[in-house]
Length: 132
Image 1 (cartoon, rainbow, N blue to C red):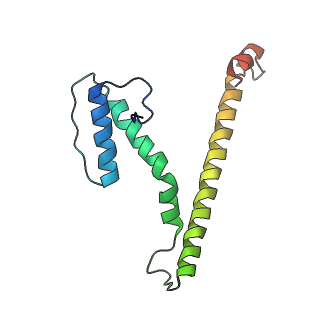
Image 2 (image 1 turned 90 degrees about the horizontal axis):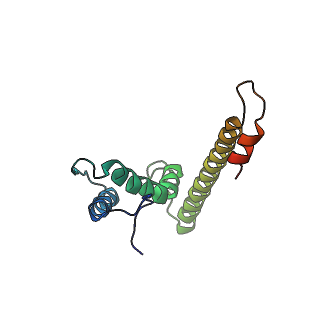
């Protein structure tokens, strides 16, 4: 399956090439300088692979951030290192779950506010349009 990084439309070859180079640069951890002619969809071609990379890396980044630094706590036993990694993974999972719950609550509040009239009463026609 060809990777489109969540691009909302069928990407043109130029956009596919740009997205794959952006993603590769993020994976490599380097600096990228990209150019493309006007009207070629640079904004989406940069945002889509960047957000895809962040989504894929979010858990590991949170886990790394939750783990104690090497000089913070010296552990020589394999079981203790494994325990630290497991604890960091648990913390990362918890943070992701809370972020997801907050995002869902925010989306529900937005949908509810979209269903209110200017005087604060519920507009039934709007509720029907915003209902999932």
